[in-house]
Length: 513
Image 1: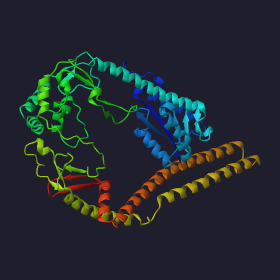
Image 2: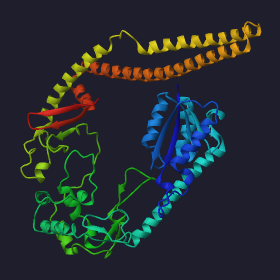
Image 3: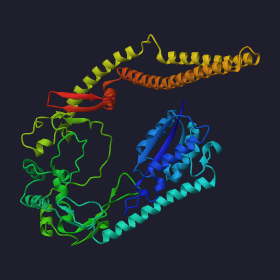
């Protein structure tokens, strides 16, 4: 049985920045849910169908890169969703072209019905079109609303930049001025560390040496100081030469406010592009400096000036190698071969991961042999999965449903026969009502049992589908054994979750499920 997808979305666009409350209470997640539930209950062909809820809280509608949206669309493509219901078209998306593409082409092709309640749109009434100029115009208005809002926010941000106010975050060494927005003052704890970093650089210390010095003294990293260390990190935070360089190269420490170093090319773009220094908004004497202009120039003059080359982004399948001691991803250096080592040794004295040093050729040779052994194990699992079980639970469940369905049909015949006997005078009214009540009770029990079996059938069918998918994956793995080593090396990285390198003779491989 296909499901109804109830899609709910609330983004930052729906929240008033000043008061931090909803601009329109009707757009709240709770309100959207009530509207959709009421609609489904009042629609005969939807009432009683199983419902799945998908909720994206805090995601923009200008693109479809939302976790629950993608999960819902994936289930729709696999045929498990037959109808999608939203409060209005803007909850589904504010992108005019992409929303129209789903309504006109993708959903009709998948056989998915789409309902936008407040826009009075039901795709079952429009035979695959968007519903004419009215719905298309609404989609366009929703997109234009987001674009207009974006322009207003950008204009307000540029006004703050021109005044020398910070619009992103306070750099390490500063903190927000109490009671005043967009102004910052020196942090009494971190400011001395920043000043020490500049002095050390001027005295000739390398960035790696400065980082090692700070780590040896247990100085909290900028993330630790602000309490923003990610909980999903596999290693303890530490100062690195990149962190030191970021501080030395930050012009804000001279008392100037620097803004507009990056910008989005589109609304809510995931990746920003860097702007040329000539486009930056720099306002001198905006806050108290931590270093003089002379100290800033002197510290930066000691930095090595690497040759600027245009970065070429390529696939890096070898980003699976980690240090088995500190958990950091191994860094790669180049020579006659490519070499892996742990960067922690540069910043911490007597680090246990210091001896780690593998060439890519040797490391891939070891991992490839392990991959072949892994494929052999999967081959045995594939043989076991092909054995037919003595009892097929799904077939048995469907058989029980047929038996109950036959009993229900028999009860309908009994009910009709009972009425005919009553009309013929074979028994009085009281006996007739008693026997009819017994039949109705038996019918109700059978219907409940049948509904439970149908749910069980759906669960078993999903399990069967997952088993078939796993079996196919096992078959593909077994077929890989016939590939050459070069082909296997490419497939090997697709199968690896993580490789922990403990030393130059021991590694641990975690395969993807």
